[in-house]
Amino acid sequence: MLSELRTAHKVIGVKQSKKAIRDGKAQEVFVALDAEKRVVGPVYELCSETDTKLTEITTMTELGDAAGIDVGAAVVTVLR
Image (cartoon, rainbow, N blue to C red):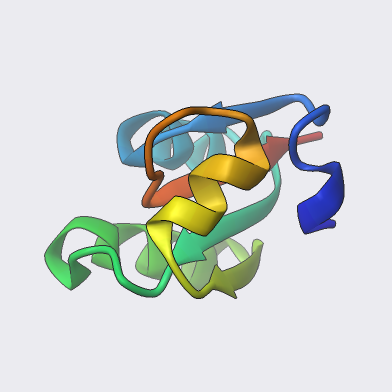
């Protein structure tokens, strides 16, 4: 799925991802392992509460690149 992330309908960032998860619009959530735990912790909790698929990616740089942006990303959420 990571290779398809660039063209997928998605949101990037913690705030937008949390909203998508709460609204039931999230298909899969990608979280960078090197992101600050205090920042991504609520995303882990929401995914657990809503039974949303969560995939961990090694670095923010790798996740940002896969999403097609020029900076690192802590969280990217693929929408339904």
